[in-house]
Length: 444
Image (cartoon, rainbow, N blue to C red; front, side):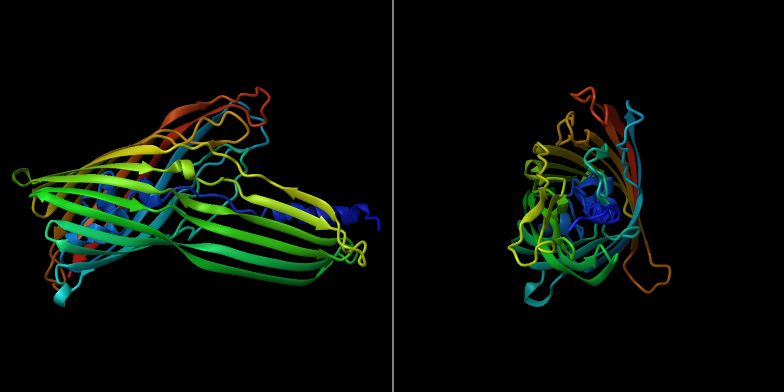
């Protein structure tokens, strides 16, 4: 059988349309970058030894023992990126991609157990919900310059659970999990190029929970001093989306996409908190080791196969088209992230906070075909919390309102392509990001 121009155009359109379905990566976690809760953000994320409520399910589940009462909190946050990619080649067919703004909602609960477990066991729950896009995996071609660490970063729902025990008065141990979902699906289509219509179509998509371990330990060797260590396992969304198109006049077209998205690396955190009572001051510091060298390929693996079962129905099918994309090696490296946080109480009802952290980029300069760009980041943050009595007099314990702001500045980084005829051309990345948060918390 010979296909005419119209039929070839229809077949080509089908293949191109399938290519547009491929998802892509979002990297890191919004908690890693901006913090969890106004206190975590304001103190530069240095809460491995200083978390004191449900936020510990992320920072260090052992710290759930730090608050011996039921605690509830809700919050909202806003992210405004102001990043830039200054291109040398203004006529390139590969457009730049910049991350967009987003709004998020957080909620959490922590509670100690009573009875025989009083002051021995505590539980916690925390969740982040992006409000503008619940969870998104967007494809950006590797030829387009893009910010690897910030593209789609807020577009991910995060659920975390934790539990802690206190076997000795000076020791707390915790364990927990962060939860995401794996995505598996399949599409089956039967179509005729001659008739120009689809005669049968089926689609199924399954979500499977994917759990990532969190664990931690806190020791108090002396009054006012806490030392802690925590571990967060890598977390990602694995997907497999094959589509089977039975083209009557030709054969079976199989278009398969698989890979990982929404990746967060393994992390080991060590932290310290020291309180000076006479100054009403707490100093916290963290050092995070992030294993970015284990990051998967940022580009999905695509396989396309077309056989001749429709052309010669009685014979064994032979491949007419067999193509497959390979993985891309990021050449990422492990990094160390130092963090520092301060908390000062000028009066009992007011807390003033400040923090700083430095994140070196895990990526080399993308001088060859890919354009996953990143740069060293300096993060400075401030915040406050004000506690006041419930004006409705429903609750005896005070309500606390927390505010925080973080300003991230990316070091300007030139990307000079090794090939002077590169289709994307050289460019320079840089800019800043603003993150603000508000939360309300209450003890029962």
